Image (cartoon, rainbow, N blue to C red; front, side, top):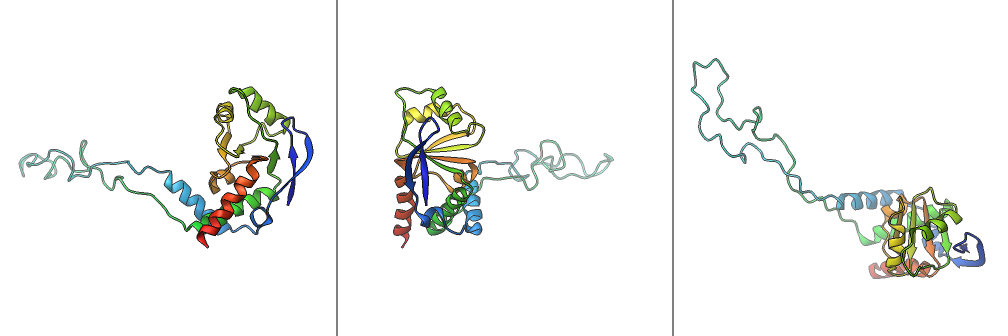
Length: 215
């Protein structure tokens, strides 16, 4: 698969980027995509919410009042869940939400969503760019030139570029990541993926090397 490489002015540079069909043109596996997105979202949960049950609430050791003669129900403890200040019934307690998925399945999910984006023409390759200092306006101009300013955009760079990252972080729905980092969820969540020319090989090598490690 070959895609045109655009300039930062939004014009076709006349060059083509070679994308591997084994990564960008496979039959998507919806099951592993679902499982990987579920894994990602579960792993974002902290699981630190905590409530006290009646056995953990302080007080209520003695009988609240005498057995007979008050005209009220007989209560053994003032920490009953039915009373104010009592314990919570079936409330949340700290737990680990971590969900694992085999590495081979994670990479298949990643290739599946990349193939979906390629099929939807939601992947654009752009010439490498960077700035001397952070300038939000420069990134906004590039997005406007490519006519993607009103969409969720994921920009992939070959290596860490803090200037580009700082330039884009104040623009809503725009994220900048190194090409080897995006997860299945982040790729699927983006409307458009902008890949810098030098980041194409980094992205492809990160998938291929992961497969070789599993093989």
